[in-house]
Length: 193
Image 1 (cartoon, rainbow, N blue to C red):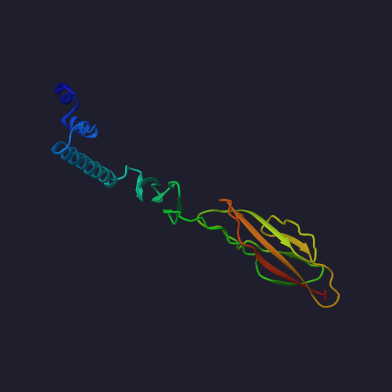
Image 2 (cartoon, rainbow, N blue to C red; image 1 turned 135 degrees about the vertical axis):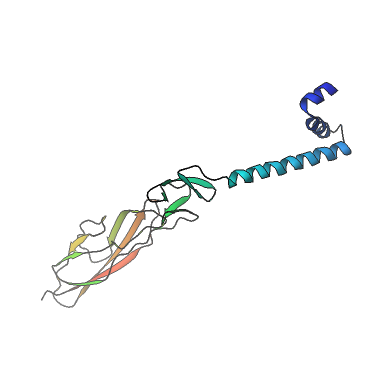
């Protein structure tokens, strides 16, 4: 390569191209390696300086990201991807946790009464919400009204002697598409007084 071209491209480029082409070695190779290391250190320092710069007005630093915040509440209004807003702070969401179904307390009711099941204590995690309820019964069969709501109802069967138990299972799904483990409740039906 002519000297005029080497000056236009820069001494560093000239030496390193010669080293890569296998034409140069020794001091030229050492110079090229030193300059490459020096450039890598400078790039790292520049990246660190960028990360240490303050966030623009109207944002706050959450992790390595500047997030807009509501000036009246001093809380972020949105969070970056893979984070959730918990108590006004964007927190990293490492694991999606499924919702927790709660079929409510066991009940003892008289026959022919209207019974309301209670799944309102079910909850979603990681900032998600419950989007669906699914109640099922195993035996004996009763007609369950609102089996996809938190509070379905049914009419207790007629019981003359002893008691009858009716087990129900609740499963909930959250806004992330995760499904809970089943939760069960037993309703005991007694003869009408």
